[in-house]
Amino acid sequence: MYLLTVLALIPLGLVLWFTVSRGLPSVLHPEFFTNSFRPVGIPGGGIAHAIVGTGILVGLASLMAIPVGILGGVYVAEYAVDPWASWVRLASDVLVGTPSIAIGLFAYALVVVPVHHFSGIAGSVALAILMLPIVIRTAEGAVALIPHGLRESGLALGLPRWRVSLQLILPAAAPGVITGALLAVARASGETAPLLFTSLGNTLFKVDPTQAMQALPLTVYQYALLPYKSLQDQAWGAALVLVVMVLGINLLSRWVLRRQIRLAGQL
Image 1 (cartoon, rainbow, N blue to C red):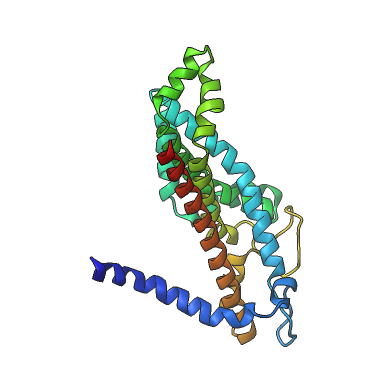
Image 2 (cartoon, rainbow, N blue to C red):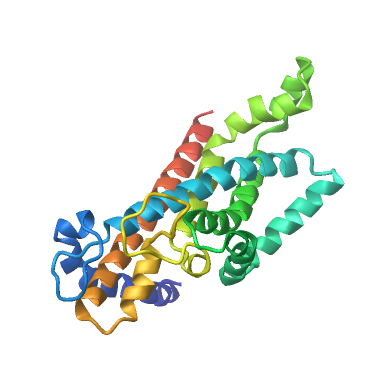
């Protein structure tokens, strides 16, 4: 078992080693985080536009997906016998396994084609579709773990079923729901394929979501393919920033989950 564990960790270790060793020289310079794209031959290039673009894209996607996903998860868990609940669960399972590039093409046809230009909003829609099934399934699992006695107590007080679900069950399941939302954010932060068809990327510093926007995954993809060492070094630096960001979100989600388990054990 120890040997198999080590074998499973070798690919992860190699990825982290290459990313840190290649990307660390870039991230040690402060201008890497404060400057935007610079033409080849001009020093001082950075990824500020990509960091801000990632925050805007993921933030808008979270506003679209997390509230709907939480309500969908509560509905599926609390009204499991309803025929629509099984369809919502099936749709979530199908979306989880759908290739992200197919979702990008769908968002391209839905948002980009009608307005005839790429935009951050289109990228946010694609990321929201990716996040939605994760939030639904994790929220369903968290709500399903709440003891039935709490539901019975609320119903015994004369509260309608929907108020019991939203005012009693959902707050009790909040740590698990937050964990699922953070996991969905972590996945959306590292997606590249949907953004190729929607937000496209931009070398300029843009905060207007109606315009094409850059993101960290797009920076890694675009700069790594160019035959310029300076841009390739920036791609490694952007990859390191992205890995650290995703790692931090995952550690935060684990902390929330462990805190929930510890509090449950004390009760």
